[in-house]
Image 1 (cartoon, one colour):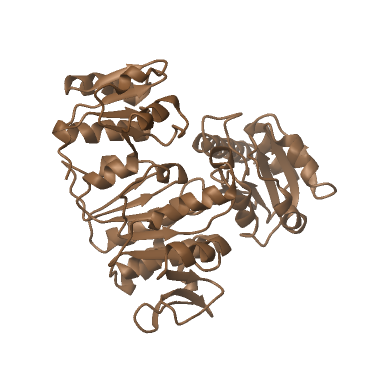
Image 2: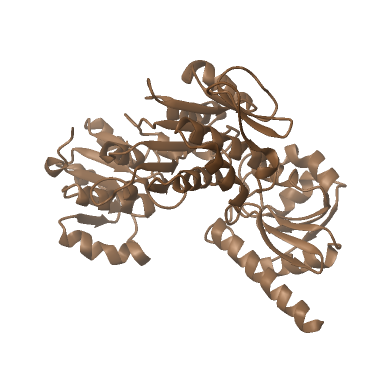
Amino acid sequence: MIDWKKEKALVLGLARSGSGAVDLLLRLGSKPVGYDAKAPEGETAARLALWEEEGARIVVGEPEAKILDGIDRVVASPGFRLDHPLIRAAEERGIEVLSEIELAYRAADCPIVAISGTNGKSTTTTLIGEILRRDGRRVAVAGNIGRPLCDAVGPYRDYDIVVAEISSFQLETIRTFRPKVAVLLNITEDHLDRHGDFGEYARLKARLFENQGEGDFAVLNYDDPACRKLARNEAPSPVWISQSFFGRIPGVYLRFGEILSTLAGEDLVALERDITIPGPHNRTNALASVAAAKVLGVPNAVIRETLREFPGLEHRLERVAIVNGISFVNDSKATNVDSVYVALQSYDVPIVWIAGGRPKKPSFDKLRDLVAIHVRAMILIGEARRLLDEAFPNVAERYYANSMAQAVLIAYRVARKGDVVLLSPGCTSFDMFRDFEERGRVFKEEVGRLMEREKHDE
């Protein structure tokens, strides 16, 4: 047991995760040092004076190794790479380097449900949290989804359970992190600019199960080849979920329109039509949520009720509006090719696809057949416009747009009644927007302006 009052910790990064770590350390009675290259802005800047009143010391500017003098532990925010000079210097001095989620785990006094995967994490995390809340439990939903995990644990927090979205960045520097329930949805190429290659990325995802033992549960997606491979080595007794396989091994399966659990005999939990969020990927997310709820003892009636009423998340296949029979859908969270793949599969009507932004490493080749089948027209934005144009020769009409306002207007003009205008960029947003949330909000604002113009012209 760590006596934090006697510990001196250095927190690297003062954005969302780092701020949560500084605040937790102060609540634990420690006097941390907080470091960032740039002076914090907004809400974090307003907190600085309060932190310093409580004994924290804040350092801003170029990293200098002397900041490590007297430090017992370093807590690294996800944005700090392992080759950062301060992390390297800490390791050379034998100072333990922890992730924010490791610090949170060490301070937690309630079970943690941890969800990871390349896609679907946020929806699954939120849905599990809602199921547990409807079962009468005091639940915190935290992690990579928005609220730092450190903010949900420790003194002055009183939860029965914490449900946390966990990224590969956060798993890099765990030591003892042991979730009661660990859920891995899928592993496909992403963040290779950080991790180097797919093998390293998959290895980091597997760390979710690294410290689990008797009494813990590992939920994995049987339909994902990388998950099946990982389970042989890292999760020897998994709870499987699947839409395509039905076996007698413990799990939750979709068979003939029924969601069945084999965790204790064969149990009809719900019907497929109880899942109201669209797309085959969301059926996987729902099955994972059901599996987590079942191992935690949630009654079937509560699970069914939550599935029927869960609306999904903002920026994830979010239904925005219908304008003269044309549906507008905001899937701004789709920042990689695999997310777009499941989005294009989610509709059986023609799609006018708004795509582009700052491209990641993986190519768009995987989408070629789906685009040929489902997409009526492509509206291309951002730095990836030419790359996307060249990726789909002789497939669908294509138009270039210089702004989201222009993209929405062009999409509306080329779409026909019954079509879906789908913002599913397949790229990051940083060439045109602060983040994917701002990109999605701007899209919705432009659709709102379009609706007002159309009403005015009637």
